[in-house]
Image (cartoon, rainbow, N blue to C red; front, side, top):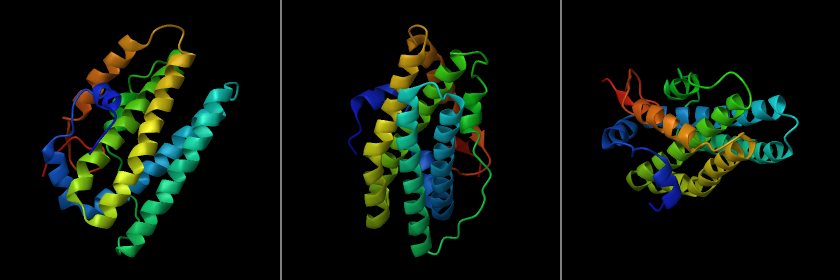
Length: 201
């Protein structure tokens, strides 16, 4: 799968084959948690819109992002229905929490860190769709490939907003979160999720 080189370079590591194997072994959980991720992504965008009402560029990009994420949620749940997979609650993976616990508490650091994390989450999602697509049936593989363009754009939107609203260069901060993100990819998780690390069977 062809991913933008900038996105590949942004991520500190590639998804291990062990995660792909876990995903293929848990098809229902993959779809359910994918739906949950789309819903959470829309919620994050809306929360940013309510919190930062004085930032027009953020409002416009997050509004579009929220609409796209909710559309993806609808598409995933429709696909689940066709496959007889019932949507249900699942415990969240620890991935986002592992990143968000390092967010600064004062502005503009809080906003910048939140946007950097958003960029990592979207980039990792894009990379995982690309990892999975070749191993899936035609319908699901085509669907995941169709998401790559929008997910890559979401990553770029988050990153450009982070640079726009920072009070200085953010490359060092991105590098710090890259270390955290790489660690999150190898942390032990008890259950498979779309953003889980190493799953303990």
